[in-house]
Length: 409
Image (cartoon, rainbow, N blue to C red):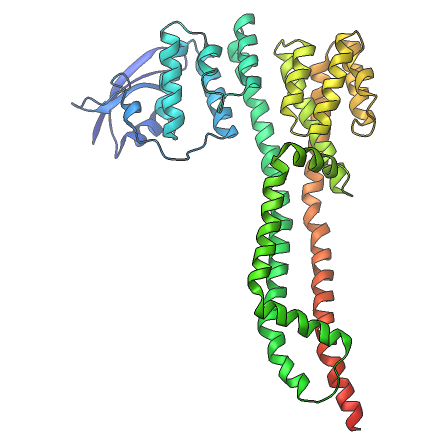
């Protein structure tokens, strides 16, 4: 099929032409490969184009979420186009054509329409708080004030990519133990429901009184077989509790405190939150946000109430004239000496953003090292757990058999 296209090259010059392709997406891939930014793509002789608002006619997928990675990619592409002197509205229209997720594409198109009607970029973005956070909007606003929107967008794109990478690694690290525990429980349930009942008849046929351990295992197996629905309700209740309770105000307060006190994992989460603090704060300060406003925004973004309260307390002290490092030094239980020292160095040199970026690199290495070693920590524990489970079951079966054999002799 033949398609007509209009696009802009990296210098902002308009180009147009025809291309043979299987679909509209194939044309967009071709233009992307040629480093061209599409303005209009339509079938030769057809009427499909961005100006005809075909993007508004796309079917929006239900529950289609816009991820942090999507926003990061959008920000970087938008920054490149603005640096190439493409007008913001045209750049956004081109990006809406290239965006795979229909719901996101529609919103980008609406943002471009608002800009054409005279709205500022930050105001247009603020209409979609579920996609563009207050953090994002404030950084863009600072870029508009300083006249450096492309540079600011590059920084926020790097920041979002780092956040996405950390979240992905943490999620992966938490999924692994969960899967292992699930497999462990399933193996135990299978043994209790299908294997032990088959051995009970053999053990009882000996006519001897069974050892305590064997009686406990048989009773447990009997409970699994006859009252499995109670077990399912218990499991469902536990899962529901751990999913819903942490989302309540009281639950989050409790879980956030417990999380930081768990042996081994507590240190990992402290490093994670300090890295997030440093990453967000340095990005905001580099974008020209005042220290007071940056601390307030970081407190909302940190994701842990213990750190949130500590940062807000520090903010109050900074407003009264204290340095950030001295204000944070009052919480040595959650603020590491390294973190305080690097902020102090940044305050003395006037380069707190670059100083904190070094902190981010350090904690990122620490986080990566912990996640990489997690499997080597869990696997021995799993082997020991399985060995104990099998050992108890074998002992429960062999003990009565041994007693029967000795009585016969």
